[in-house]
Length: 401
Image (tube, rainbow, N blue to C red):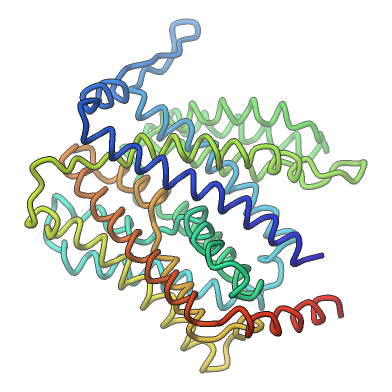
């Protein structure tokens, strides 16, 4: 039962990852064709929403990065709340290994980046770019390996990626906040207090909370704190259970997930992955910014995730995932280096200069691609199908027991 549910979940994530890849490729094709001007003008087109003289006016690229991505972070918030209350993050002992590996996988890439960009005031702010992991992309590559890896390893990657997302949320809140407007920040406490009150009164309808979440998003956006964080905060007020024993959180998560996987993330990828290759020279590819990002994703993630996991197990502080070997843990560490969506997002918060953003795209795409290829090869070679068949049978028996 558990294995069947996991297979269904991962095939769902994998198909979203494939669409993500196609969207990124399409963006690169368009950005380097005769449609490049149309592409730039379209993303730079201003759209406004006004109510009673008060409103927002932003270019389309920011509506995507601030608006649509708030829905993406809302889904992450729902997943985090579910996992904390009844899932893989509920039992602290099960979180130790992927949790510490996630910390290593955020710290080491940042260190690698800073080695190349320390002292450069123009680029040093991008240190968090290689610290992120794209869960959809990583799971998509893992799905290509098929049944050669145990389900426990898939759970390990999923838990690591969830904790990585949590780390990214904290990083964005602490280090990528613009100049604060305290009046709007104080006003943002009003919808938060209203959502808390609805929870206390056991109001289980999600519509009022979602409406308050939209108000919170507007106020947070105007306050200078990145508006996507409003999505996470709103998600934590969605009730896990109602008085009839049903789960509004589960229903909302399952209903929203396809739209995020098949619409929001591909749209974000198309809007942000358009690397301009025309006139590019080797010295641009090897500049400190793209090189720091790429090596942070390739080397930093591998050393951080695998190194910390190895030390934790050898020191007796954590257990290996059931049925997994060190070659497979190394492959998972490589897949954690697929930063793509989250790395591009943090890059968009770090730099507004189009030239620097093009370098960010070069580093993120090259680092993610190489990490994905190495991870796939490592996992493909780590276990044969015949060997894994016996492990899968043992794991099914252990799960049933």
